[in-house]
Structures are given as structure tokens and as C-alpha cells.
Length: 543
Image 1 (cartoon, rainbow, N blue to C red):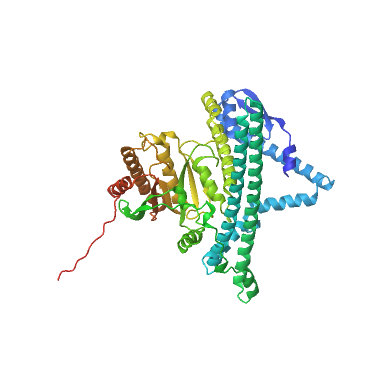
Image 2 (cartoon, rainbow, N blue to C red):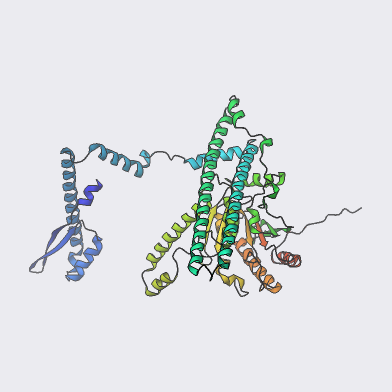
């Protein structure tokens, strides 16, 4: 019926109302366009006001107006229905298409006729994976994931070696050309060679990017098919042939060489742990940790498959589809990309291991960019078209985010985290005069609120709101910044009780690895002074 509605034309009809005022016999004629779009009560009020009509006809006029509009509207509907029936009888409308349209409308709008919701492939795979990772088959899952990780890492190592050789060869060529500059070669020759070098690098990088993309896609498909097959096999214990075919023995674990240059250096970890109670009446216990570590250490996989590393990975995998997720906060600039700084390092770590559950990091960033553009357009539409707003829009790239805003990426292929909060900060965080109302601090509050509403029970936060130390970050600067963040996070955690009903959480405060031990222990002594740390009781028996 929708096509007929689109063809419905606007008709104008006269509403005629007759009434007597004293000895006078008056007639009110008003042209109305059908279908009538405006509110009838508003139309009636305007007629009374514009024509200065007497109050004693107000109710009768309203009833007559309602009756006229209702009758004429029904006539239009009847005329439309007759035209639609004639079109069906004459064969202008396909009956099968019409019945399909009606059936679809009933299914979409009427619960009684609607189909039961079907689970998607992702939901089915998530349920199967959750069952397997909590079964004896978890060993096989982790072994296969590790083998895939080693395979991708070796591919990346080959790419790096090839790119390094190309750059060295191009560097030697450029040195020779520079020596001949002004003699037999000109600036144009140098520029031409530089353009050729750049094009060669781009071609090689694109080649390896496509190869890695293809390898990860194949791994993801193989892994998901293998998991489904294993789950079906375990449901049928009598079918041992499939089990023997797909089972991976621990001896088949692949180990990569130690001398490939991509093994991450482990520095001495400084760590302090505290147990605190927060709340006015009903107190909630939380765990706090202060660590001197690189934020990406929680993301990186270790190549050597030691038992401790495997336990970390097992814990992360078992909680992937649970109510105890782990997240961390990365401080980024206002561009949604992975081309520079910690964003590039984080993307590199993500790409070293195939994500078997969620889209890749680049695909997720592209989705975030589209959402940001859509949100900006909607916000501009709601605010109106003021001159100042237009100037701000022109000055600022609409695809960029503002300080204090953040976007979220999901991961199943990182060592100890499931969720990354990419919090936008500007150079103001390096100054010593930020307050509790600074966008970065308010961004932390919003992140903690998301943690409460989305079952993230462990969150890692950069305590000083920087990932690297610089000259202006003196001891007084560090102490002042740490005190501000401690106090603000404490306030936000007390708000959590009203957000989630008081669930115990773990908050990890990270400081850069370049900070001194003396500074670390000063921060460690500050924490129990701000938070209420649970004290231990020593019981002694009297003899």
C-alpha cells in the first residue's frame, strides 16, 4: 500500500459552517487541504480568533469541524482503496508481491506473527568458545593460538628485514647521488630518485600489508571452523577419529628464535598493592595497584611459551565473555588513526596476533571515524546554523575528537586486556596547572562510568596522565599531579556505588618506566594517605 500513499495527491475542499447571530444568518467558509496535517484544536482556535466568532458557537464549531474532516478523510481512504482494488483486478499490481509486503509488515510490527530472534554467527561462536575455554580443551585452544601468533610474528620479522634492506640500499644510492650533486647531477635528479625510493617503499609495504591481511583472514577462518568442529566432536565422545585429527599435542608448540630482534625487553617491575574500603554506610572493598611499567606491557605477547605467560593468557581468554573484563586507558591525540606515537605502537602489537573474535584494529578505527562524523553532523543540526558555530566547524576537522572524549576498541588477541579506551588529551596535560574540571580528568570519570555499565572490573590508568617523562616533570610536578588524580579517582569510585550498586573493582595506576625508584615510593606512600587502606589486626594470646 505504500506506493499508493506516495501517489496520493493533495485536494482542497471548503468547510462550510452556518450559524445565526441575532437576526443575522451567517455562513463561514474555510478552504482546507486534505489530508489535514495540522492539529484540529489549533485550527479551531485560529478560526475563532481570526474571524472574531462569538463564543456561544465554539463547541458546535469544533464538533462540526471534526466531523467534516473525519468524513472527508474516510472518503479519501475509500477512494484510495477502490483505486488499489481496481489496480489488483486489472493486473497492474503483482498479487504475490502485495502479499509478501503484507506478510513482512505483519512480521515486523506484530509480535504474534514475528519470527523468534535468531542468534548470529558471532553469538554462536562466542557461546561455543566460552564452553571450550572452560573445559579441558582450553589447552588445545591456547596452543593453536600461540602457533598462529608465532606464524604471524615470523611474517612480520621477514617484512621488517626486507624493508630494512631496501632502506639501506636506497640510503647508499642517495649518498652516491649527493656526492655527484652539482657535478654531473642536478636537484631534479635527486628529487626524481627520492620519488622512486618512496614509490618502491610504498609498493613493498602494500605488498606485505596485503599478505598479512590475507594470512590473518585465513587464520581466523581456520580457527573458527576448528573451534566449531572441536565443540561438535566433544559433544560426541564416541567419535574419536575427528578428535585424533584435530588434537594438538603440547610437543607441537612452535618456538621462535631468541635472536630475531623483536623480543620485548623486560625491565624490573616495581609494584605496590593496597586493599581499600569506600562508601558512606555500605562500604565496598576495592584493590589498588601502583606499578612502574609500560602501558603496552599489558598488551604484548611473549614469544617463549612459559607457564606463567600461558596462565596470564588463559585468564584473559576465560574472562573474554564474562562479567569481569579488563581494560586500559591510552592517551592519544585528536586524530582517529594509528600512524604515530603510542597509537602506532598499540596497532603494531594488535597486528602481531590475529583477533579471532572481533574486527581488526584498522577496521574498528574506520567504524569509529564514521560514527564520529555522524555524531558531529547530528550535533550541528541540533545546535542550528549560527555564524560562530559555522566558523568553528570550518576551523576544526569534523573527523577529529575533542580533549576529554574517547573511543573504545575491543580485543581478544592481547595479553591481559579486552578493552582499550583511547582518551584524547592535548598539551595542557603536560602543564602543572590542570584542575579537577580538566577535560582529561572528566574523561577518566566517563571511562569509569562505562566500566560500571559494561562489566569492566579491572582498569589500568596512567597516574600522571602522560606515558613518557620530560624535563618539566619535576618531583613537585609529579607529586601534585598524582595527588590530583588519586583524589579525583577516589571521588569517581565513590560515585560508582550509585552507578553499579557497589561492585568490587581493581584499579591499576601506572607510572612511566623512566621514573626513579625514589619517586615511585613517594607516590606509594601518598596513596594510603588519600584512600582508606584496610589495616591488619595482629592477634596475640595472653599466657
